[in-house]
Image (cartoon, rainbow, N blue to C red; front, side, top):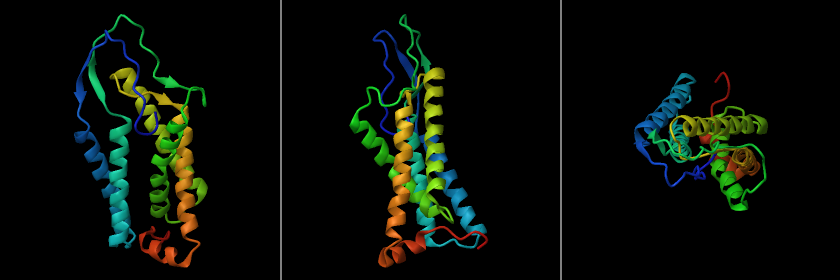
Length: 198
């Protein structure tokens, strides 16, 4: 599944899993790396200001939170069950998919669209949407892999991917709309990424 919270993989009552991988030792370094990369980018371009660093920090925290809630829990030592293991993958869209899940998956990625729009030097709708789609696809693939290899707690679902991508696009639209008004544009200006070559 490509957003949080994901639906758990059905498990037989006779299946026992243990050896849970702790989330914090994984997601905290990921957040630190994201923050460091964005901050170095600002320093290299000589545009390292407090508002832009705040956006970098927000995106780092968001990345860590998304990872923690979409990939974990992960268990290293599943005990084999006599029942066949269901494939943790949904490839047919809009079948047995709740409206509430669609709304949640969309709303979860709206902040990503907003933050990416602020980080990119010249954000466009397609760049933000492609970024959101790539991140959602990465989560989807990771969920499938962990469910197959290490008894992950989520399933990969094409519906989540679609609605996550829609949410990213909506986040861009929010920023684009706010930039049309002089007062809100002035408020957002310090938080926006540096221009290319600056």
